[in-house]
Length: 179
Image (tube, rainbow, N blue to C red; front, side, top):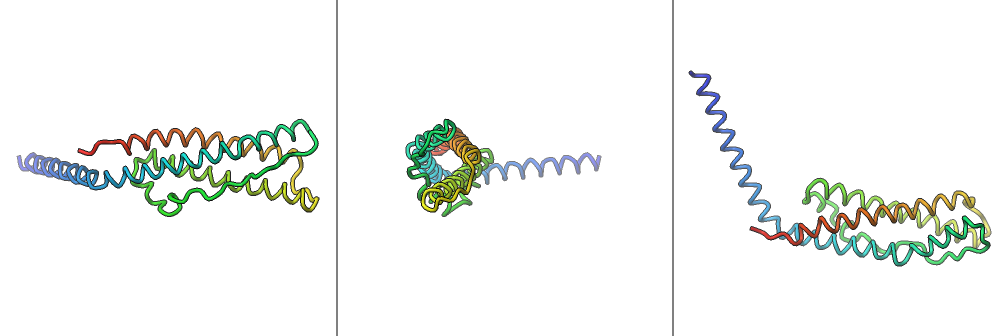
């Protein structure tokens, strides 16, 4: 009898603890809800700006450069191929991603990692082209350049897909009603 009583007491204590924990989480959600909504809105704006810059400014010149290199057409029209000042909100407060569910947090981290890799690849591409034009020194072969351009286009495509998915998920958080 005594062991049954002890088990029931532990079970009751656990039930009370679980209820208290759930109430505390609801309270935190209510407290953090507006902050999450603001942060989600900031990420939505930033991701949208990144995707717009990548697509409008870089996609066509890179596709054109790739076609020219693959067809072995003479001169390649380079144009500007660097990403400007992006990731301001994320860079200022990377810890904010922890406020979101793990799938969104991980998605944000992956998205920004891909954007950073794209930026570095574009910087290297621009440096290689500028060096080739200005100093007549080839840092990369045509094959290496084609591989790099295909990688950059793949990164842009990948960031596009994940960025659009993240925007949709973040909109749900931004637009959530607080109870």
